[in-house]
Image (cartoon, rainbow, N blue to C red):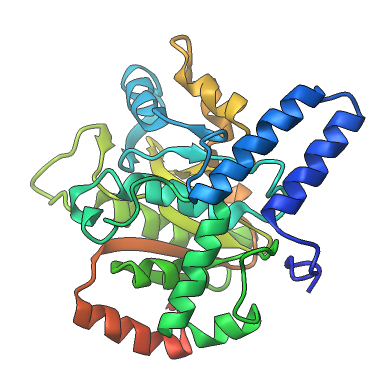
Length: 319
């Protein structure tokens, strides 16, 4: 219970106040800044909108430009649609990665006409406590009753970790079509997951027939992919295929602060700055990975079918 944030020690608001108080005591934050940020946090929680303090925009466009002028060892690269990066703050350090990855995914969907009707009630990126309330709403609709029971039907006001099941339930309740794919054991040498890399490549490269040779740098219209493993989750925003055939995931990590991500926006950025995004097979060696991939919108009938199916929620297993 303690490991997954169900220890009744409060949630985002309480942790923010504690950590900001510690920062003042240690001389890392002036008292005036503490009071300013406290007011901003309370306003954010009251409105339900994220305060934008941890957001970095424009990275996908910068990556497209960077790959066009560099990366000689890259045979081809596929990039997802425009996506903002969000990192964990003082209020959600240690447990907020799932919520931050949902914010990244949502930042992409809100810019796509296909999803605007499903997301019409979301004019801005919601804050973590509002996301928690939205998941509770999905549970009340009947999505994933087993998962709801695990959390005692309550997320708001807690530091509970969420994973692929909660993201799936929330998106389905918003009539966003998605699926969970479970890479449940390594399929390559040295405990690697080559089938995961191939799946991501196929996801981003689908739509280009054999007779149509895509450009070396492809900006797709696909949303990013939510990627879960034990203890952490990240967002896959693209994939490189080296000239030697090796594949490399491009990942936004909510543990990476804005200061590092904003370096990718500089005019003098080069390929060496991509190391924080690149993940080759040798760096992806957890026992199991799950992804949540968005694939369109659900009709009302399809939403009901997803709700019924989620009573015993299972991922698609690969292999």
